[in-house]
Length: 90
Image 1: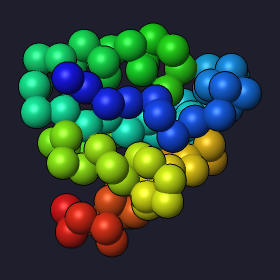
Image 2 (image 1 turned 90 degrees about the horizontal axis):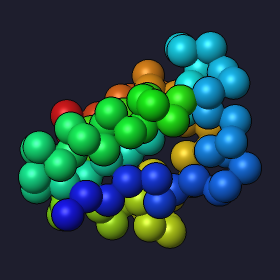
Image 3 (image 1 turned 90 degrees about the vertical axis):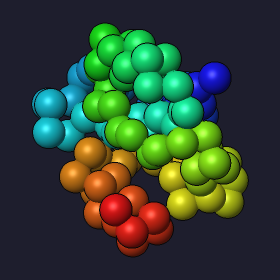
């Protein structure tokens, strides 16, 4: 099981690939299955996003409202790393 893409409005997904690479949106991925996570990470890249590993499924709730990653329509990869450090400590 993998959780991803749940923190986006459909309009944000449409704009993913239109941005330069360093400004593309970070798409959080949570899973206990590393092989499945890798497949979803490739799908994220193929759709124009930047895969962002949020760790195991226990962190998936961070993508739900009012979680720290529940509104990430403007969250770049660098900003996502900073936010993950604040929230999860890594």
